Amino acid sequence: MWNWLKNKPRQSDNELRVLAEQLIGPQALAISLAETVRAYVAAVQAGKISYPAHRRKGSSVVEIWADLRIEALHKMFNFGQSNPFLLSDLQRQEELLACFLDERPHFEMPQPRGAVIPDTIQAMFQVYLYLDAAGSEVADRETDRTGLKLVGRSILDRMESECGELRLRLPALRVGTSEGTIPPTMIELLYEDVTVKAKSIALSAKFGPHYEGGIKFVEDQLAKQDEDLAAFRASVTRVMAAKDPDHLSSDR
Image (cartoon, rainbow, N blue to C red; front, side, top):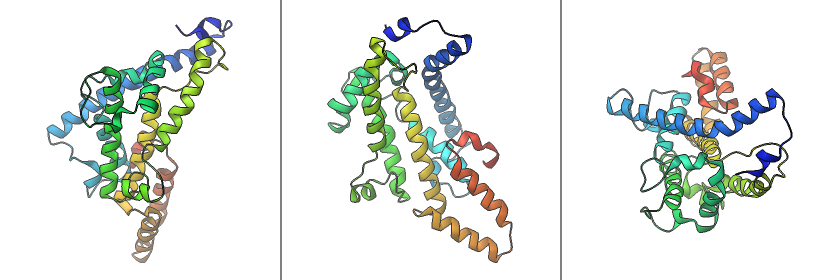
């Protein structure tokens, strides 16, 4: 049991509501992801959606971004004895982090080990392998393995850094000396990282690996054709500022 929860002074109703959201949020995210993946797979199998998203010709950046994220996260389900829901379990974070940051089974073998924790970490790595493959097809600067290697980077850099910070925060939470906030779980860190990388791949798929230049080229073409340049620029501004494709449903 996390002693921090026992040692907290009496809280207001609003503080308790925020605390409940912090505790329940990761599990709700895990359940939502599982349901979304299931629905997406069914739609693909029924021929309602073309797969993979980054190869579509007529889709918008937002459509590719949203669907590519689902496709990548799909890879963490049904891998050996993995249990992706553990990534949302606050009390299992230290065990998972030790496996991911220290044991690193995802770098040892492509096959599942047949144990829950290592297979869960390997399942998480399957998400990044999918992003790497998709990003390499469009030469995306955030996910293409070859391009990242040339500049001394890895597709796992952000996740490893965030997980390292999470591991530093967990002991204080366990013994009851936390500053009053519950840190994110690995499922939340993964979701945020995949969202960022899926956006970059979507932009690269639509406008090329140097997508800022691709966007400028489209602007020039619209100007020459006397089309609605203002509307295009407004749409691009919304997409570039957005942190989640779900916030841009009108641009789908």
